[in-house]
Image (cartoon, rainbow, N blue to C red; front, side):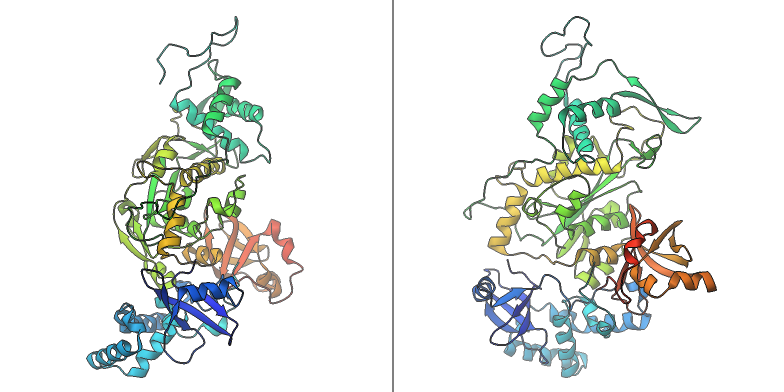
Length: 571
């Protein structure tokens, strides 16, 4: 599927790299631009011809964009930001006059009128337009030439008191009725068990559930720890657990939808990726610490990015921090992630077709709760993503998630740390929770929602085939590095120190940083980091703002000892 901003490399009759600037609504033709050209001329081609070149091997689509200018703005001199903003203010209106700006006769008249009205020269306008089209069609494309300083593109119902079912045997425990709340526990318990096990065993999952969810748990104010006692008498049987697990589906095994025909009626306007919406919801449970399960970690918030056209969930992020813009950005960064690889971290095995989204949208609608303090210029300048504030529209994923957890408004206050009154409190950690959320979102994407006749994934794929897309694909680690918060770390003899943890990378080893720190003392460096993933950080290179170096915990740093000088992860 060919989309706006894609790069196509043609081998014949001569090597050219074409960027798709615009496609017509009927998806029959496209204006393209040769990124190596010295002129500012766009070319009109038939999309069917381009697709035939791809299918027959005369051309191939570049998976990464080596010409795009993506940079951490914290490292840019104010002068360069001013030059970029001035250039963008000059051509912004021209760039949005599509498709007239790509048509030779109309473009000439537009440029002449614009130059006369604003007192600008033709060469200046053409130079800015050419650079804008060459380098990814974002404001950062107009930055001064940092391109030579980095290796871009190399990134790294039941009745109360009445027991249902057959009578118990003499002497057996009274048993319990399985209501919606109990089924939530079954789903979450099976997901949390399978998150840490290579193979799923119903009996082992049941026994783990009894230990985690049906022991008596209370908060000890003296030790500030969770105290567990023997399991309660009224517990579900293995037969009940197994029966409802079969009814609701085993973890990680959602139903595959039937194919969607091209004649299906799709009432949603627009196309996939035209608008994503960022929403947040608080899950009404208390998590335990991943490091010490006797300690409480807090109540989690789930951030979800979904496609307005199809309803498909494109990105998620689970956090224990207060609701805010920075946490929402982590969900947006997940939109660009390789979903099978991400799911594998949580014990889930899916194929790419079950969760195919790996792109950023054209526009992001932000929940008003998350909009306060939002710095949206980073998204627009680097990735061309425009932001708007507005309440989320229908979010069917909430219904699927509600089958596993009780949901609260994101603004609702977290419960007191000594309140363990809910059945799921103090039973799972954030990794087990994320595994259950993954199950919910994959299942949601594959199943019909509400009154619509098609599953979100079906609508997503149909929209891409029939209407194209407004999606923008960028390397996963590039997106993460640009959206993560930046902090100051220190180079020490033990490693790059951030928040009391030490990291290393091939760049630091090749430059003998740690030996220099031992001899001359420590010095500060800037790093981007994810507070929810302490395994790695990204070292920002002030000499080359388009490059970053992936740094791993010192415990894992031995992998870099044999790295040749000059090896690095960057873009």
